[in-house]
Image 1 (cartoon, rainbow, N blue to C red):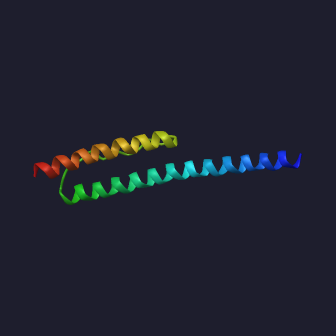
Image 2 (image 1 turned 180 degrees about the horizontal axis):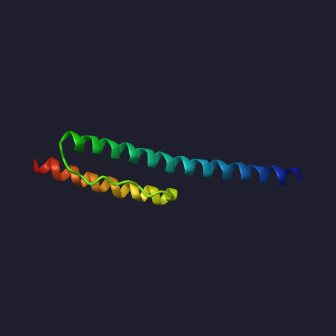
Length: 87
């Protein structure tokens, strides 16, 4: 009986640890994208390039927020490439 309980506790502990790692990965990805977006916006500002400032909707879950940030980054990267390679 003790082995069953300790095995069950090990499974629960492993599940919690795995869940925390996944949450940490999402947080890291979101923070990395936000930093990249800020850097590109500052660079575009310094180049006097007009770009579309986008603010995220409130109430998005983590996956939706990550996808929205990826789309925003892609748009800014495109604006940067157009301005850098044209000028």
